[in-house]
Length: 364
Image (cartoon, rainbow, N blue to C red; front, side, top):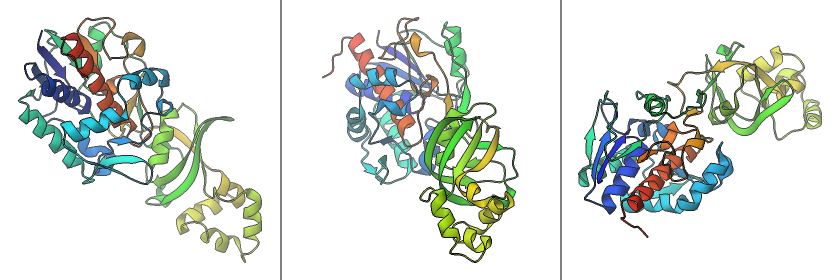
């Protein structure tokens, strides 16, 4: 049983293929991809720099299903990821001030090139533009990714095999709001942000918000989008370093509201704050009514996926023998910062290790 078919030539699928073939060259591995080329989503990650991982990757609390991730990390952790990136892909990593890990070149093209070159070097067969049914001969890995920026609907594969998919929505995406954002278009500003429904705070984060004409964006907003519920609002503390009492004292040092606001905010943001009256309250609670999430085409990931009750911690299916399911198609999601990309690698490595053991090709 040396035949392995991998559906989806993204990060998790290519990782599994390379790890397997390098350690057992006799394996007959074929990668199937719906796009015309492999790994195209890599080029869109980390604003073109490719945020591969994070120094806090082993903290399972960064993920939605943290207990499942905690068990997975007992088998494969951030050190295994770093070893794969260096020894299998031949890439050196660079850490930024926030703990995000990038290729040293800080170019996503370097990561994609490393994957493509290794597939060629190991003579792994690649079939692109696939619109075919599953070949379940031998061992099958489904690594088709999610609806986010994807052409592949792997969910149909899983449901046809009897698996359950939890509810799906775009995540790490921009938020559409009811208010007119056009006056704020182009402004970037550091805030403390929270998403709330009624009096219930769903999540809190800090970072830079970016105002577009049609939506609010920025890493802090993308992270909050994971907690979206219908009827929610998003609130920005525009002056997190100052308490309300501090602001009252500071305001008294200026001749009028305009001078005070312009001492703190970009001009157009100051104008919008003043329009809403009670400027001190607005500085601490500049609020928008969320009308919805932007589309899967803008989303970095999809929230929801394969029900984790139906797979083991090595990503093997509990329903079908010799079937593995890895990557973003699973009901696993995390905040921005390399956690989702890192999980894609971790899941591919873990499944590959399990397959090698299944084939009696033992690894250290």
